[in-house]
Image 1 (tube, rainbow, N blue to C red):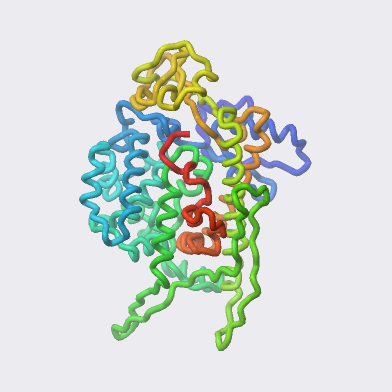
Image 2 (tube, rainbow, N blue to C red; image 1 turned 180 degrees about the vertical axis):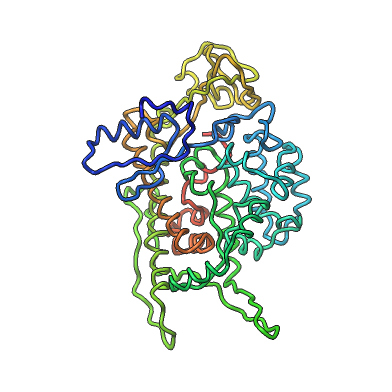
Length: 481
């Protein structure tokens, strides 16, 4: 792999046999090599490790660097740079949180967002009638956040205001991350008969559920957090909307014109997530109260029992991992915030202006982010307002200031073990959450994480109990880090 030319040959997925007998030092060097080449670990299948290429750096690096915005939008992308579109989505999120579904005036909201640039209107038009494969290759995390924004705001193609039932339908059938043209193709290739037969063989009820899409499977939660896209805030809002609807039913048209109402199956959560207070060093844990006796009820199928158990064993454990990561991040930021800052090199990019130099990284870290958001090759500080109008250049480069990166490969030795532990908790929690989605569907997962049983029992800060993932709001806020 050292001799392989990764720049000449673009490889999206790498599968490599990694046996238990492989020395740990050799494995560490191999993992470090993949990380330097822009790959991340996805999954282990028996003895094979699957690594995927990370996207988002080209042609618009503002997709993964939140403090960056381009003076001119990239070709074949949205009307604005991805960085500008991120800011627009944060403003849209503020409107969505103020008004419940069905009461939001989408036209008024979109008009207020026009001051941020034409990108949101270009995105809506392209989502309804365009081919967005180029957008996917440029910014997977941005595409996921954009999809959730549309699901919370508008119906497909109709331009009508979104309602709670319409959102539930998007999540249940897993349309949410597909634009209209791709969704039409999925409908064309969908075999109703094959899916019904597969459900009968598995002993489960039949539901129309489309694949989640490439972006969902390739991008990691850590990448989304580090790139600052408000995807988790939107999932949090969707979860609250779904839970507030009460029990959802299906309207199924039967023969002779009759309508049958069938309740949507959701897990019965039999555990409670216990979260110690912020000052405690104890880890979160799940408590299992004594099962309540049921009277005159029909027997449960094994699949339904597993469905209920997975809500605790998969989602409950994932929530505990996220709470543990939250506690450690708070402790790090409170004790040694400057030691956690990193400077990420960005070649062939220049800012619109610069301050007086020279400065070193220690000087920049002691300044406010508005005064020093990066350092150029001449060791001049770059204010944040200058970094908002970056442009590609054949000479020079930037060192972008980042407050906290969760990838352990970017951390110096003193904090390596602690940041590696945070990264491992989030990564394991992510894989447990994804496994629940694969087994039971996206709607089931979003509904379950909005329930109070998995929100934690912290009484001191009830505003954080419903967030998903259960990370500090500052880690999902708009300020760059």
